[in-house]
Length: 222
Image (cartoon, rainbow, N blue to C red):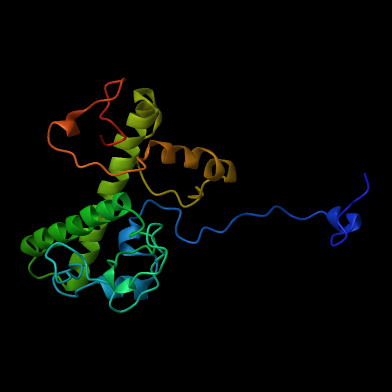
């Protein structure tokens, strides 16, 4: 078949190329990086350096606003069609965390959970340094996040049989690649987007008890 692309001759199109792997700009681990970031300078702006806690902003229980102008995602809201002041955004570990209420809410929950654990570790170990308390609280939050995703969310999403198929953690295996395949990233990883509501709902105690058809708590959050 003759090539109709004048800018790319057929001879060039036939040249074999090695396999290309996409670069993960974040991390392949379930490590809470959307709270703690993957860059030390970034996480340093979040820390209070007191008792191992994350910095609190002018509102109690919330991180600081983006007064340092960290490069957070700040697209113009569709109903406004203009850029908004980046100072209104909260500083957490990922530039996209202010993208929607769901991401922000989850980030705030883990942000507060870190500070709760930091205060707990500080009381249990008053001789610990700020760094020791911070890292201990960080490990606790990451472990809790891994447990929620692997042993609560995944079985609820894919069925209880999956829970038995997931092996229990025994030890770190450095020879096991932590990344995901291109097929998983392009197809399977997109599937959970379909269970996210396109609008937010204000729920009360009773509505949070809703269950799906298979008896699991409603994943759509209604």
